[in-house]
Amino acid sequence: MNRRTGGVAVLAGAALLAGAAGACRRSSQEPLITYFNGDFNLSLRYPASWRTDQAEQDGMWYRYFLGPPTGTQRKPAVSVTLLAGPLGMPLEEYAQKYLAGNTLSSSRDETRDGARGKAYRFASADGATRHSLLLFQEGGRVFGLFSQADAPLFERHAPVIDEMERSLTPERPESYPEQRNDKLRFSIRVPPSWRPTGAISGSGTFVTQFTSPALAADRNRQTVHASLMLTIEPLPAATSVDGFHEAAREKLGDAYKVLSHTPWNGGFVDVLWVETPMATSRSKRFYRVAEGRGYTLAFEARDDAYPRVARWCDMIASTLKVGPEVGRP
Image 1 (cartoon, rainbow, N blue to C red):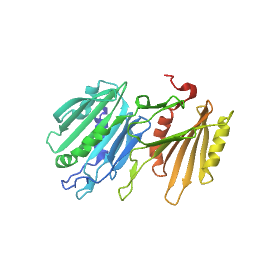
Image 2: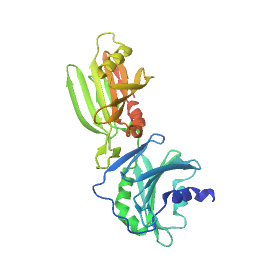
Image 3: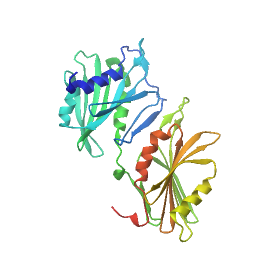
Image 4: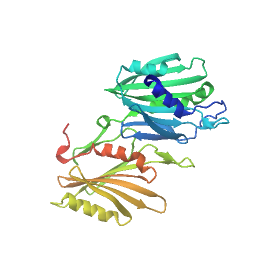
């Protein structure tokens, strides 16, 4: 295997394309869930029933999303591969690793949050296999999606492939919409995919809440989300961040078990575990104090979904500004 075609070959080997045309369409009822990668800061949505796997080769990273099994060999009906890594050549030249020897049917320019790229649809020389390729260049790296399936199955799954391509997002915290309150002296940037679910205020305390996109789905197709809650409250004079943190821990009670406690940006960050009759969850709480106010940024997710969102929480928390930081670039 030469290095020029090695990346494509490993995709083909891992994807295990279907050999039969009897796969069913994805049910319109099936939820799409969000995958977030904290190494490359990318997210996309995919069907909850699809399996995933990942690999690395020649400096490139691949995450495979494999559609429902079909045919007598029970191979995935379709594969969609998220790829990211260094780009040592022009983007069009990199695309030729996939396009060479195939029949191109369409191409178009694409942009995504400042990253420029190209989208291609093409087929194998005999027409038996169809492909979609979406590539973006951002500085010295490439990221994108490569999809493939037997021709009849590609047609059936084209709406899903289209949706996955549309959802591919470079997560850049500096470009997130800013939530800002000059009176309470805070600002934070929250991804557009995290929807606001409410805000309340009273007696000098302010609370605002957001909900993440779906991170997982149960067998009954109920989706699992993370919550974000930012609380700002007045503090007694001369309250230190240690005193604020200790009081906050006491308010939570013994149901919350501390898994870790570390310094963070002049304050603290705790990871906690809590079990209720309904579910077991983990919470990540960031504490800061400025100008007589206490700021608590709390993320919580069901225990099985928490690892999928923990690094996204860190990214959002990194945008929190309080007190004299507000207004700084």
